[in-house]
Length: 244
Length: 278
Image (cartoon, rainbow over all chains, first blue to last red; front, side):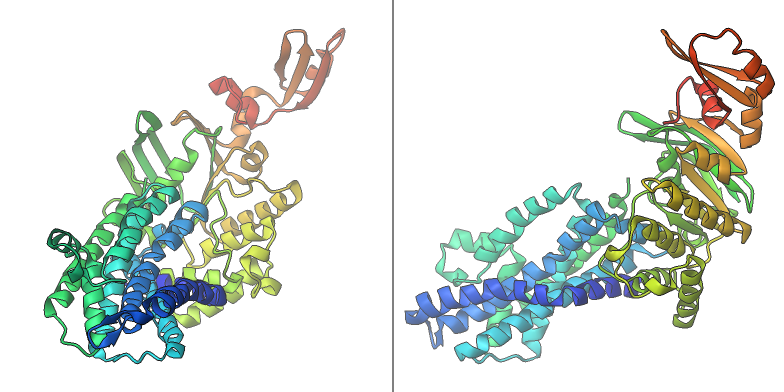
C-alpha cells in the first residue's frame, strides 16, 4: 500500500491551490437548483409532511456527491493526457491498489466538500435535516461508488474526449433520473424497474430517508456497497490498461 | 547493469522494436542515437515499466522487469522527454511527492531535497511554483526529481530537447556529474553533439534495430577525421580524409563550393544507415 498517501496528498495539494475556485464551482449549480426548483417553483409542492425544499436538498446532496466524486476522472485524465504526470506514478514502485486507493480517496474528499457546501447553502432556506450516522454512511457509500467508477473509466478511456462522452451518457442522465428532483415511485412501474439499476437511485433513497428521519432500507446500502466494491475492482484491474 | 535480449514491441501493424540485444555496464554513460521514430523512447518506456514489452527479456541490476517490476522501479530514475512535473505545485512539493512514492521517510526526504536543490543549483527556487520556472529550470528539476530516491540507473529520454545551446551545455555538465558520482546513465538523443560529448558508448538505432554499438571516437575514426562537404549541381556530396592536410590538398582546382569540418557521429550514422539522424 506504500504510495497511496503520496497519490492522495498530491490531489489534496492541488485542491488546496485551487480551493476558492473549486468551492465556487461546487456552489453554483446547487444554489441555482435551490433557488429555481426549490424556492421559486417548489413552494407550492408538498411531499407528505415535507416541503419540496426538504425533498430536494437530500437529492442535491446525492447528485453533487456523485458528480464531484466522478470529477476525479477529469483530473486523472488531464494528468494523464495533457501533463503526463500519470507516468510519474507508473514509474514509481507502487501497486495498483495504492494508486487506486489514493485517487478514490481524493474523489471522496472532493465529494464530501461539495456536500458541506450544499448543507451550508441550505441554511438560509431554513431547512433542517437529520445528519446522523446513517446519513453520512449513505453519502460515503455514494462517493465511494462514483469515485471508484471514475478511476476505473479514467484508466480505460483513450482520450479526454472519451471521458466527456462517458460523463454525458452516464452521469448526466443519472443525475436527473436517479430520484434527485422527483420521487421515483411517481413514475410508471417499468421505468421504476429500470431506475432501480442505477446506484444513484439507491443513494438518493438512503440519503433522503436518513436526512428526513424516515426509516431507511438496508437494501439501498447493500446495493451501494456491492456496486462500490465492483467498481473498485474494475479500477484495480484497469490500471494496467493505461499502459501502452 | 542493463541486459536486453531480443526485445521486440509492435503497435498494431507497426514494429517499434525489431529485436534488440544490448548490455550496459555499471557506471557507464550509454547513448541511444537515432532519428525520430527509431524506437529510442519505446525502449526507455519498456525499461522503466511505462510500456509493456512484446517479447524478449530485460534484466536491470540482476532483476527481471517482468517478474520483479517493483524492485526494478526502485532502482531506476526516469527523466522523460516531455516535462511531466506538477506545474501547480512547488519545486519542493514535486520532490517530496516523488520521495513519498518511493517510500522515503520524512527525515530522508528533507535531507535529500536540500542536497538535490543545491546539486542542481535551485536552492533559491525551492518554494516557487513549477509553472513559474523556465524550461531549463524545469529540466534541472526533472533530473533532481529522478535522482531523489538515489537510483542506480538513470534513464534520460532526450533530456535537452527544445533547450537553447547555453542551457543544454549546463544540463550536460549536470549529467556528467551524476555519472561521475557513480550512477549508470542510459540516454536517448537525436542530438549528435550530445551523444559525442556525453557518452562512453553509443548505439545507433534505426527502424527498431541496433545498427552498431561503439565508442564515439571509434565511430568517427572509421570514417576519417575530416570531412569535406562539396556543393555542386547534383546537391551535396561528402568526402572523408584521415588528416586536414589531405583534405586541403584535395581542394586544389576545386571549383564548386565546399566546407571543411571535423567528422562527427552523423557521418558515421549516415555511412551505416544511409540516412541522417535529424
